[in-house]
Amino acid sequence: MSTDEHKVWVLDDGVREQTLERLGDARRVADGLSCKVGVLLVGRKRCESARLFEHGADQVLEAVSDAAGPATRAATAVRYLRPLKPRLVLAAGTPDGREWAARLAVHAGWTLCSPSLLAEVIRGELTVSVLDASGRYCRKVVVATKETAVLTLKPGVAEAITPIPERTGDVDRREPSVADETVSVEASIPPDPRTVDIRYADRLVAGGRGLGDAAGFTALRRLADPLHAGIAASRAAVDLDWIERERQVGQTGRTVTPELYVACGISGASHHLAGMSGAHHIIAINNDPAAPIFRVAHLGLVADLYAVLEALDERISG
Image (cartoon, rainbow, N blue to C red):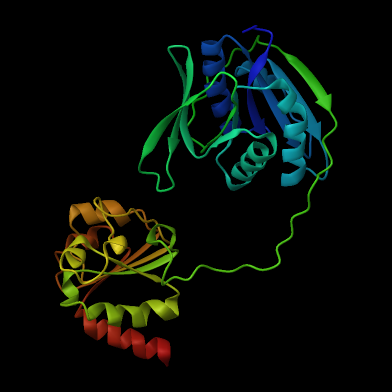
């Protein structure tokens, strides 16, 4: 492979710290493949290219437009990158970056690896570590010589290299492509909280052994429905056959990070806390003041569970 070829590219709409992080990973991969690194910037204003060269770029291709939306960015990337047949393209793991990467991969016919943790060269082969949707499992993908992989990396995952101030490169300014598609939102259909996978629920009401029996989940449903929340459970409730295993939260179940997590009658064993402690707002109701769940709760109620549920039902329905 000629060292004159730019086979690793970084995408962004500006220059920020996460751009330099991905550029660091791109530089390391390019060194392993004996190729060069390019940066494609498609944004609404010109950027300072010197920082990019200091952090490992060999070329900066810049396209500036007042209408540099998702479709324009994708069309521009396809127009300028597809003829170059890159091995690897690194995009941001932000919502905008993931959309850009997905559009590019679809229109160019390339492989999308999103979200990813790492790209590296192992015994001469380009290998990518890709996370599954839950973020718990990782698989390694070997990118064939004639294939292109488009990766997204969340901020903080990649690592910038130590800048070399004397490094320079080429700046190429191009015209952005006119968007070849228009996307409009006709309607937004929210998921049904009763059936949605608990990993993707915004709100969850969870029950444990403290419910007393399977009928306790009927009481939880009366709280969950007006909150537009899904139902979840601890391992103890699942092992007692009070609810299906797909609703289990914990180390041996599913990891959840909802905006609201209401733990009802759950003591908070370590394997359960491992699966839900990332929730943004945790409310715990338990009659045992020493229950471990209170260590992670933002609001804890030491009270009779059914008395609290009855009071909440009256307040919500009233």
